[in-house]
Length: 141
Figure: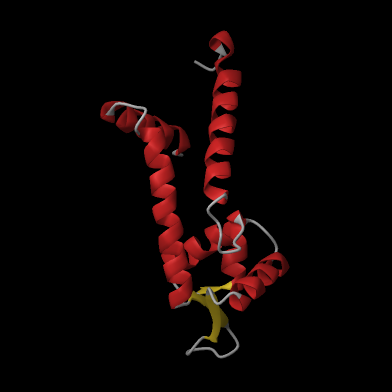
């Protein structure tokens, strides 16, 4: 079924881009903490992975470590993350969330749930389940 039946590829792309822009616009209006989208994502990654090396964060975000260093400097200045030396190897510097970073991440995730929830409210519960199942299937390897 590789053929583009009736312009479905274009419809899909347009729908995804439109929804992404709407969600991003709504969400970023609530980033009153001075965070950018990539900084929010970095906080999320650090929380999920625990204390992390700069190189690991750069790999995850698919950017150079120097770009991550600038972002981390800003997050440190805002009090959202802290740098610490690894107890096993003092040459290694780890980045971890502060309690303030955990709190801001929690607030932003709650806001994200509210925003996406409003979009889900337009669908029946089984449509939400089907939508998620389809997106997971499309994203799987």
